[in-house]
Amino acid sequence: MYDRRTGLNDHRKGFLGLLFYPFYAIAARVLIRAKVRFLDVHIWALEDVGQLAMDFDTYLKQQILSHRKVVPVLLCLGRKPANEALLAHWSKHIRVIRGRWINELLRPLMTFPELVDSIPAYSIVHRGAAGNHGVISQWADRAPLLHLSADENARGEAQLRALGIPEDAWFVCVHSREAGFKPVHDWAHCFRNSNITDYAEAMREIVARGGWCVRMGDATMQPLPRMPGVVDYPHSPSKSDWMDVFLCARCRFFLGNTSGIYIVAGVFGRPSALANKAPLSATYSIFPGDISIPKLLLDPQGRTIPFAEAFADVASEYHLATEFAERGLRHIDNTPQEIAELATEMLDRLDGRIAEETDDADLQARFRAYVQPHHYCWPAPGRIGRGFLRRHRDLLG
Image 1 (cartoon, rainbow, N blue to C red):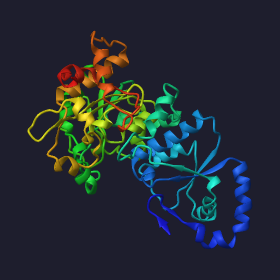
Image 2 (cartoon, rainbow, N blue to C red):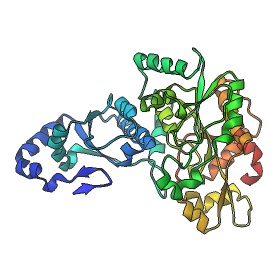
Image 3 (tube, one colour):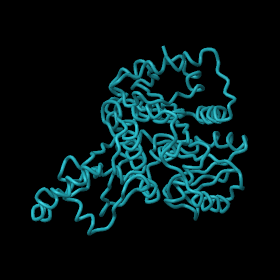
Image 4 (spheres, helix red, strand yellow):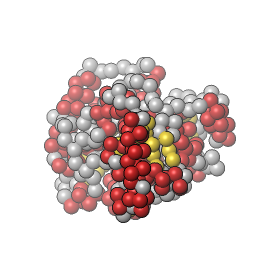
Protein backbone atom coordinates (compact mmCIF):
# COMPACT_ATOMS: atom_id res chain seq x y z
CA MET A 1 0.00 0.00 0.00
CA TYR A 2 1.38 3.43 -0.95
CA ASP A 3 1.31 6.06 1.80
CA ARG A 4 0.84 9.52 0.32
CA ARG A 5 1.94 11.17 3.57
CA THR A 6 5.39 9.58 3.58
CA GLY A 7 5.74 8.33 0.04
CA LEU A 8 6.63 4.89 1.41
CA ASN A 9 5.32 1.48 0.52
CA ASP A 10 4.01 -0.55 3.46
CA HIS A 11 6.21 -3.68 3.40
CA ARG A 12 4.70 -5.30 6.44
CA LYS A 13 2.75 -7.37 3.89
CA GLY A 14 5.36 -7.08 1.15
CA PHE A 15 7.01 -10.01 -0.58
CA LEU A 16 10.56 -9.39 0.64
CA GLY A 17 9.46 -8.56 4.16
CA LEU A 18 7.53 -11.81 4.51
CA LEU A 19 9.82 -14.15 2.62
CA PHE A 20 13.03 -13.05 4.33
CA TYR A 21 11.66 -11.89 7.67
CA PRO A 22 14.17 -13.91 9.82
CA PHE A 23 17.09 -12.35 7.96
CA TYR A 24 15.62 -8.85 8.28
CA ALA A 25 15.06 -9.42 12.01
CA ILE A 26 18.74 -10.30 12.48
CA ALA A 27 19.86 -7.35 10.33
CA ALA A 28 17.57 -5.03 12.31
CA ARG A 29 19.21 -6.03 15.62
CA VAL A 30 22.67 -5.34 14.18
CA LEU A 31 21.67 -1.96 12.73
CA ILE A 32 19.93 -0.89 15.94
CA ARG A 33 23.16 -1.50 17.85
CA ALA A 34 25.05 0.44 15.18
CA LYS A 35 22.62 3.36 15.83
CA VAL A 36 21.35 3.38 12.23
CA ARG A 37 17.96 5.05 11.90
CA PHE A 38 15.83 5.19 8.75
CA LEU A 39 14.04 8.50 8.36
CA ASP A 40 10.29 8.43 7.88
CA VAL A 41 9.60 11.90 6.49
CA HIS A 42 6.48 13.68 5.39
CA ILE A 43 6.27 13.91 1.61
CA TRP A 44 6.46 17.72 1.80
CA ALA A 45 9.86 17.41 3.46
CA LEU A 46 11.19 16.69 -0.02
CA GLU A 47 8.68 18.35 -2.34
CA ASP A 48 8.71 21.82 -0.71
CA VAL A 49 11.99 23.75 -0.53
CA GLY A 50 11.11 25.36 2.80
CA GLN A 51 10.33 21.98 4.34
CA LEU A 52 13.43 20.43 2.77
CA ALA A 53 15.48 23.07 4.57
CA MET A 54 13.54 23.20 7.83
CA ASP A 55 12.71 19.59 8.64
CA PHE A 56 16.18 18.11 8.26
CA ASP A 57 17.78 21.10 9.97
CA THR A 58 15.45 20.81 12.95
CA TYR A 59 15.82 17.03 13.21
CA LEU A 60 19.63 17.12 13.11
CA LYS A 61 19.89 19.98 15.59
CA GLN A 62 17.49 18.15 17.89
CA GLN A 63 19.75 15.08 17.87
CA ILE A 64 22.82 17.18 18.65
CA LEU A 65 21.11 19.12 21.44
CA SER A 66 19.91 15.90 23.06
CA HIS A 67 23.37 14.27 22.67
CA ARG A 68 21.77 11.47 20.69
CA LYS A 69 24.20 9.99 18.20
CA VAL A 70 22.59 8.18 15.29
CA VAL A 71 23.39 7.40 11.67
CA PRO A 72 20.38 8.76 9.73
CA VAL A 73 19.47 7.08 6.45
CA LEU A 74 16.99 8.44 3.91
CA LEU A 75 15.57 6.10 1.27
CA CYS A 76 14.79 8.35 -1.64
CA LEU A 77 13.69 6.11 -4.50
CA GLY A 78 11.09 7.70 -6.77
CA ARG A 79 10.94 10.94 -4.78
CA LYS A 80 12.13 14.11 -6.52
CA PRO A 81 13.33 16.73 -4.06
CA ALA A 82 12.38 20.38 -4.47
CA ASN A 83 16.07 21.24 -4.77
CA GLU A 84 18.69 18.61 -5.59
CA ALA A 85 21.56 20.86 -4.53
CA LEU A 86 20.07 21.39 -1.08
CA LEU A 87 19.52 17.65 -0.63
CA ALA A 88 23.17 17.14 -1.62
CA HIS A 89 24.16 19.40 1.28
CA TRP A 90 22.06 17.35 3.69
CA SER A 91 23.75 14.20 2.38
CA LYS A 92 26.84 15.34 4.30
CA HIS A 93 24.87 14.61 7.48
CA ILE A 94 22.37 12.00 6.25
CA ARG A 95 23.00 8.89 4.15
CA VAL A 96 20.77 9.53 1.13
CA ILE A 97 20.18 6.32 -0.84
CA ARG A 98 18.87 6.73 -4.39
CA GLY A 99 19.60 3.35 -6.03
CA ARG A 100 16.51 1.32 -6.86
CA TRP A 101 17.67 -2.13 -5.77
CA ILE A 102 19.23 -1.05 -2.49
CA ASN A 103 16.10 0.97 -1.71
CA GLU A 104 13.93 -2.08 -2.30
CA LEU A 105 16.31 -4.24 -0.28
CA LEU A 106 16.43 -1.88 2.71
CA ARG A 107 12.85 -0.65 2.81
CA PRO A 108 11.44 -3.69 4.72
CA LEU A 109 13.72 -2.71 7.61
CA MET A 110 11.45 0.29 8.18
CA THR A 111 8.83 -2.12 9.57
CA PHE A 112 10.96 -2.36 12.72
CA PRO A 113 9.96 0.67 14.86
CA GLU A 114 13.27 0.75 16.74
CA LEU A 115 15.04 1.41 13.42
CA VAL A 116 12.85 4.35 12.39
CA ASP A 117 12.99 8.03 13.30
CA SER A 118 9.76 9.73 12.25
CA ILE A 119 10.38 13.34 11.27
CA PRO A 120 7.21 15.42 11.43
CA ALA A 121 6.58 18.34 9.10
CA TYR A 122 7.77 20.63 11.89
CA SER A 123 6.48 23.88 10.45
CA ILE A 124 3.16 22.59 9.08
CA VAL A 125 0.66 23.11 11.89
CA HIS A 126 -2.97 24.06 11.36
CA ARG A 127 -3.54 25.01 14.98
CA GLY A 128 -0.96 25.45 17.73
CA ALA A 129 2.77 26.12 17.97
CA ALA A 130 5.12 24.82 15.29
CA GLY A 131 7.57 22.16 16.49
CA ASN A 132 10.68 23.76 15.01
CA HIS A 133 10.68 27.03 16.96
CA GLY A 134 11.66 25.53 20.30
CA VAL A 135 14.55 23.57 18.78
CA ILE A 136 15.90 26.56 16.84
CA SER A 137 15.54 28.81 19.90
CA GLN A 138 17.54 26.31 21.95
CA TRP A 139 20.19 26.12 19.21
CA ALA A 140 20.57 29.90 19.61
CA ASP A 141 23.82 31.29 18.18
CA ARG A 142 25.60 27.99 17.56
CA ALA A 143 27.17 27.60 14.11
CA PRO A 144 24.92 26.47 11.25
CA LEU A 145 25.12 22.86 10.07
CA LEU A 146 25.50 23.72 6.38
CA HIS A 147 28.42 25.52 4.73
CA LEU A 148 29.60 26.17 1.20
CA SER A 149 32.86 24.54 0.18
CA ALA A 150 35.75 26.44 -1.40
CA ASP A 151 34.85 24.93 -4.78
CA GLU A 152 31.21 25.97 -4.41
CA ASN A 153 32.25 29.51 -3.51
CA ALA A 154 34.53 29.72 -6.54
CA ARG A 155 31.83 28.40 -8.85
CA GLY A 156 29.27 30.78 -7.40
CA GLU A 157 31.58 33.76 -7.68
CA ALA A 158 31.94 33.08 -11.40
CA GLN A 159 28.15 33.13 -11.74
CA LEU A 160 27.93 36.40 -9.79
CA ARG A 161 30.30 37.97 -12.34
CA ALA A 162 28.05 36.61 -15.12
CA LEU A 163 25.09 38.33 -13.44
CA GLY A 164 27.01 41.62 -13.43
CA ILE A 165 27.79 41.74 -9.71
CA PRO A 166 31.34 43.02 -9.17
CA GLU A 167 34.00 41.13 -7.26
CA ASP A 168 33.90 41.75 -3.48
CA ALA A 169 30.40 43.29 -3.72
CA TRP A 170 27.84 42.24 -1.13
CA PHE A 171 24.25 41.48 -2.05
CA VAL A 172 20.81 40.90 -0.56
CA CYS A 173 18.39 38.24 -1.80
CA VAL A 174 14.89 39.67 -2.32
CA HIS A 175 11.75 37.59 -2.71
CA SER A 176 8.01 38.20 -2.69
CA ARG A 177 5.59 35.29 -2.79
CA GLU A 178 3.40 35.17 -5.93
CA ALA A 179 0.67 32.88 -7.25
CA GLY A 180 2.58 31.39 -10.18
CA PHE A 181 4.85 28.89 -8.42
CA LYS A 182 2.01 26.84 -6.90
CA PRO A 183 -1.14 28.00 -8.70
CA VAL A 184 -3.10 24.93 -7.58
CA HIS A 185 -2.68 26.09 -3.95
CA ASP A 186 -3.34 29.78 -4.50
CA TRP A 187 -7.04 29.56 -3.64
CA ALA A 188 -5.94 28.61 -0.12
CA HIS A 189 -2.86 30.75 0.39
CA CYS A 190 -3.32 33.89 -1.71
CA PHE A 191 -3.50 36.00 1.47
CA ARG A 192 0.23 35.27 1.86
CA ASN A 193 1.14 36.80 -1.52
CA SER A 194 2.50 40.31 -2.01
CA ASN A 195 3.67 42.54 -4.84
CA ILE A 196 7.39 42.65 -5.63
CA THR A 197 7.07 46.32 -6.67
CA ASP A 198 6.38 47.15 -3.02
CA TYR A 199 9.96 46.03 -2.32
CA ALA A 200 11.46 48.49 -4.84
CA GLU A 201 12.00 51.27 -2.29
CA ALA A 202 13.84 48.85 -0.02
CA MET A 203 16.00 47.69 -2.94
CA ARG A 204 16.90 51.29 -3.78
CA GLU A 205 17.93 51.81 -0.14
CA ILE A 206 20.13 48.70 -0.22
CA VAL A 207 21.81 49.86 -3.44
CA ALA A 208 22.30 53.34 -1.96
CA ARG A 209 24.11 51.71 0.97
CA GLY A 210 26.56 50.06 -1.44
CA GLY A 211 24.92 46.67 -1.95
CA TRP A 212 23.29 44.75 -4.79
CA CYS A 213 19.90 43.07 -4.84
CA VAL A 214 19.25 39.65 -6.36
CA ARG A 215 15.56 39.01 -6.88
CA MET A 216 14.79 35.33 -6.18
CA GLY A 217 12.03 33.07 -7.47
CA ASP A 218 11.13 31.14 -10.63
CA ALA A 219 10.27 31.95 -14.22
CA THR A 220 6.59 32.57 -13.38
CA MET A 221 7.53 35.68 -11.38
CA GLN A 222 6.45 39.11 -12.56
CA PRO A 223 9.48 40.57 -14.38
CA LEU A 224 11.13 43.52 -12.67
CA PRO A 225 11.66 46.82 -14.44
CA ARG A 226 15.32 47.69 -14.92
CA MET A 227 16.80 49.10 -11.72
CA PRO A 228 20.44 50.00 -11.02
CA GLY A 229 22.12 47.40 -8.82
CA VAL A 230 19.21 44.95 -9.08
CA VAL A 231 19.43 41.54 -10.81
CA ASP A 232 16.21 39.80 -11.89
CA TYR A 233 17.76 36.38 -11.34
CA PRO A 234 14.72 34.12 -12.10
CA HIS A 235 14.71 35.42 -15.67
CA SER A 236 18.47 35.02 -16.19
CA PRO A 237 20.49 32.16 -17.73
CA SER A 238 22.11 31.61 -14.31
CA LYS A 239 18.88 30.31 -12.76
CA SER A 240 19.38 26.80 -11.32
CA ASP A 241 18.80 24.76 -8.18
CA TRP A 242 22.48 25.01 -7.35
CA MET A 243 22.60 28.79 -7.75
CA ASP A 244 19.43 29.18 -5.63
CA VAL A 245 21.29 27.55 -2.72
CA PHE A 246 24.50 29.51 -3.31
CA LEU A 247 22.70 32.87 -3.34
CA CYS A 248 20.79 32.09 -0.15
CA ALA A 249 23.97 30.88 1.54
CA ARG A 250 26.07 33.88 0.52
CA CYS A 251 23.66 36.82 0.77
CA ARG A 252 24.23 39.44 3.45
CA PHE A 253 20.62 38.92 4.42
CA PHE A 254 17.39 37.70 2.87
CA LEU A 255 14.56 40.20 2.35
CA GLY A 256 11.40 38.15 1.89
CA ASN A 257 7.98 37.28 3.23
CA THR A 258 6.17 34.04 4.09
CA SER A 259 7.63 31.98 1.24
CA GLY A 260 9.81 29.18 2.61
CA ILE A 261 12.88 29.91 0.49
CA TYR A 262 14.16 32.27 3.20
CA ILE A 263 14.62 29.17 5.39
CA VAL A 264 17.41 28.06 3.03
CA ALA A 265 19.26 31.25 3.97
CA GLY A 266 18.54 30.54 7.64
CA VAL A 267 20.00 27.03 7.68
CA PHE A 268 23.23 28.48 6.26
CA GLY A 269 23.30 31.05 9.05
CA ARG A 270 22.14 34.08 7.06
CA PRO A 271 19.57 36.40 8.72
CA SER A 272 16.25 37.40 7.17
CA ALA A 273 14.07 40.50 7.17
CA LEU A 274 10.52 39.35 6.41
CA ALA A 275 7.62 41.59 5.46
CA ASN A 276 3.95 40.79 4.83
CA LYS A 277 3.83 37.94 7.34
CA ALA A 278 0.41 36.29 7.60
CA PRO A 279 -1.46 34.90 9.44
CA LEU A 280 -0.73 36.95 12.54
CA SER A 281 0.23 33.93 14.66
CA ALA A 282 3.12 33.32 12.23
CA THR A 283 4.54 36.83 12.54
CA TYR A 284 7.78 35.98 14.33
CA SER A 285 10.48 34.39 12.21
CA ILE A 286 12.25 31.12 12.95
CA PHE A 287 15.88 32.09 13.42
CA PRO A 288 17.64 34.33 15.94
CA GLY A 289 18.59 37.60 14.32
CA ASP A 290 15.59 37.60 11.97
CA ILE A 291 13.26 40.60 11.88
CA SER A 292 9.67 40.50 10.61
CA ILE A 293 6.54 42.59 10.27
CA PRO A 294 2.96 41.35 9.78
CA LYS A 295 0.19 42.36 7.45
CA LEU A 296 -2.54 44.35 9.21
CA LEU A 297 -6.01 42.82 9.43
CA LEU A 298 -9.22 44.71 8.66
CA ASP A 299 -12.67 43.79 9.96
CA PRO A 300 -15.77 43.79 7.67
CA GLN A 301 -16.30 47.51 8.39
CA GLY A 302 -12.77 48.37 7.27
CA ARG A 303 -11.46 49.00 10.79
CA THR A 304 -7.85 48.00 11.47
CA ILE A 305 -8.06 45.40 14.23
CA PRO A 306 -5.79 46.15 17.23
CA PHE A 307 -3.15 43.52 17.91
CA ALA A 308 -4.56 42.39 21.26
CA GLU A 309 -7.95 41.74 19.65
CA ALA A 310 -6.45 40.14 16.55
CA PHE A 311 -4.20 37.74 18.47
CA ALA A 312 -7.07 36.76 20.79
CA ASP A 313 -9.27 35.89 17.80
CA VAL A 314 -9.09 32.44 16.20
CA ALA A 315 -8.47 34.27 12.91
CA SER A 316 -4.85 34.73 14.02
CA GLU A 317 -4.45 31.00 13.35
CA TYR A 318 -6.41 30.69 10.10
CA HIS A 319 -4.43 29.05 7.32
CA LEU A 320 -6.92 29.27 4.44
CA ALA A 321 -7.93 32.36 2.49
CA THR A 322 -11.52 31.11 2.51
CA GLU A 323 -11.60 31.27 6.33
CA PHE A 324 -10.84 34.99 6.25
CA ALA A 325 -13.26 35.60 3.37
CA GLU A 326 -16.15 33.88 5.15
CA ARG A 327 -15.87 36.41 7.96
CA GLY A 328 -15.22 39.39 5.75
CA LEU A 329 -11.68 39.86 7.06
CA ARG A 330 -9.05 41.40 4.79
CA HIS A 331 -5.27 41.75 4.96
CA ILE A 332 -3.44 44.96 4.15
CA ASP A 333 0.02 44.52 2.65
CA ASN A 334 2.93 46.35 4.21
CA THR A 335 3.66 49.66 2.51
CA PRO A 336 6.85 50.26 0.51
CA GLN A 337 7.96 52.60 3.31
CA GLU A 338 7.47 49.91 5.97
CA ILE A 339 9.46 47.38 3.94
CA ALA A 340 12.24 49.92 3.35
CA GLU A 341 12.38 50.64 7.09
CA LEU A 342 12.64 46.90 7.74
CA ALA A 343 15.56 46.54 5.32
CA THR A 344 17.28 49.62 6.77
CA GLU A 345 16.98 48.25 10.29
CA MET A 346 18.60 44.98 9.23
CA LEU A 347 21.45 46.85 7.53
CA ASP A 348 21.95 49.01 10.63
CA ARG A 349 22.03 45.94 12.88
CA LEU A 350 24.52 44.17 10.64
CA ASP A 351 26.67 47.33 10.51
CA GLY A 352 26.52 47.64 14.31
CA ARG A 353 25.04 51.12 14.24
CA ILE A 354 21.51 50.52 15.46
CA ALA A 355 20.10 53.35 17.56
CA GLU A 356 17.18 52.39 19.77
CA GLU A 357 14.64 54.91 21.04
CA THR A 358 13.70 54.93 24.71
CA ASP A 359 10.44 53.03 24.23
CA ASP A 360 11.55 50.51 21.57
CA ALA A 361 12.08 47.76 24.14
CA ASP A 362 8.64 48.45 25.59
CA LEU A 363 7.00 48.22 22.15
CA GLN A 364 8.74 44.89 21.51
CA ALA A 365 7.63 43.53 24.88
CA ARG A 366 4.03 44.64 24.38
CA PHE A 367 3.77 42.92 21.00
CA ARG A 368 5.48 39.75 22.25
CA ALA A 369 3.05 39.56 25.19
CA TYR A 370 0.17 38.92 22.78
CA VAL A 371 1.78 35.68 21.55
CA GLN A 372 0.52 32.73 23.58
CA PRO A 373 1.60 29.05 23.69
CA HIS A 374 -1.18 28.08 21.27
CA HIS A 375 0.06 30.49 18.59
CA TYR A 376 2.12 29.16 15.67
CA CYS A 377 5.24 31.23 16.33
CA TRP A 378 5.56 30.38 20.02
CA PRO A 379 8.45 30.54 21.06
CA ALA A 380 10.16 31.79 17.87
CA PRO A 381 13.29 33.83 18.68
CA GLY A 382 12.97 36.63 16.07
CA ARG A 383 11.94 40.22 16.70
CA ILE A 384 9.47 42.67 15.14
CA GLY A 385 10.65 45.55 12.97
CA ARG A 386 11.05 48.61 15.16
CA GLY A 387 9.83 51.03 12.48
CA PHE A 388 6.61 49.06 12.12
CA LEU A 389 5.95 49.11 15.87
CA ARG A 390 6.64 52.84 16.05
CA ARG A 391 4.21 53.48 13.20
CA HIS A 392 1.47 51.33 14.73
CA ARG A 393 1.93 51.90 18.45
CA ASP A 394 -1.75 52.89 18.57
CA LEU A 395 -2.62 49.26 17.73
CA LEU A 396 -0.65 47.96 20.70
CA GLY A 397 -3.21 49.15 23.25
